[in-house]
Image (cartoon, rainbow over all chains, first blue to last red; front, side, top):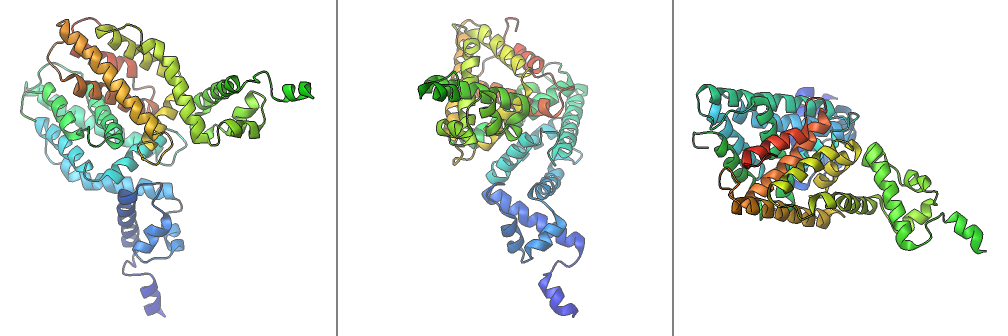
Length: 201
Length: 201
């Protein structure tokens, strides 16, 4: 009895592994074709599980999406956490943006979802609120560190400036997605950050 | 025969006026409840026309949306066109953003739509590409004017800086929509622009 069942369930039998496999599949599919075009069926098929099994783990596409975004953050975490402070953190931001330029599908997905999720009823609303709070705090800490080292070109309010840097990164995505030939997000951000601090970014 | 027909068609008999009335109704509805929640039926009902009449003028919600955005631009035009140059133009940008803070529904709508429209297949794609080209050119001209008057604090590439200012405005919308108490878009922009130029913004 258990052998055909195990085969039907594929190689990821455990719930946690199954969940992880689904998220990675969704990540791939969304990053390649975007959120609207990526279907739950494609995501299930890609890892050889039934559509109903997928629905058991993620009851809606938007729930799956929230999971994918958390996974995306996990991937980006080594680049952003680290012991990096001050200019190092700012350099990492440029790296993250440069990497985003390599995954336009996922960047588009993030861009649309963050806009949709401004609606308090949206399933990813809490996630995005928490995400912005965390990112702004992280960048503000980096700026405070630069200030302590006396490496800022002029005094800034760390939190307000962190909000601007975050906004700049978000806004550049829209322009880049609309016209990839004319916009270099990473270089734009680098130039901006370079104007803020003395160390080379 | 003509009298009851005229009554059924409401006070806007001419095609151009009818179109304009529909757009203004859609503008109101989208600005109040957002794009997703605003229905074609509500928009028709509000100006007392049949749903089918609405569909005759705008065959889809996204088409209506593109029209609303053009109307929004028309409203904002007096603030942005004018003979304003240099610091005057930058002050106007702050005014426009302050006004956006008064219409959160429409701001959300714009924010979501600009993200969705990064998809080349989206009905508003061409509109948004053209819009960004125009806005960036307009702000770049303002910065060039400031440079000629020797009123910039430091040299900037006008087009690149115009892209950053535009990106900042867009990105702040997301953060403001997510957390209106903590973010003051207009003040954030003002502080940023003040750092760029000598005249008081």
